Image (cartoon, rainbow, N blue to C red; front, side, top):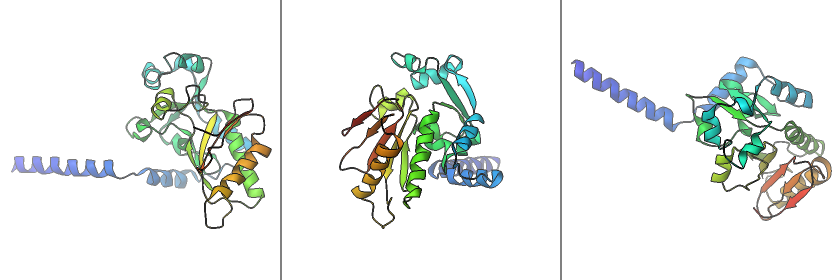
Length: 240
């Protein structure tokens, strides 16, 4: 009887474990966090800065060796990038905070397996404040012209060097510095179709009103992808 009960409990534990592993409960955690905090979309630069201030800053010299090794920031040439930088410490439900509009902290974090772990939710990220401000400016300009300010998907923000190598990003990618954003453009003009016209709207706003000569814009013709960054000087390119 005892043996039967033991094996039954083991079987149930395996089934429950598989169930939890298969299904993504992150949306439920987000809803719980939103209900608990009553947070509102971040619509001002002041609000962006306030949200960032709620996260602990950690100098690169104080990062745990395990993270430095995992991210490759302890290896050349990445040690120079991390030097004198301050990383944001993201712990537990910090990831669900709205950072720009309804985009959450987690939307700017490296999209690797580490992001999905629920047992170890302590992570470190680089985020350039100016880059976040530029994303908000893009949304505001879209809204001014009666376009969909959420008519795109944010596919990549910060990427630590290990993940950047995995996705074959440029060796000096601005994602490693926390200065870049990649978007997939959708139905910006709200006509029911996502096409190159929608992408042209975004590129035009970035070129003339948001980035101008202050950063880079990756245009990637014949795709719906757009990159922009705040490197501090003008850069333009068409191919990956």
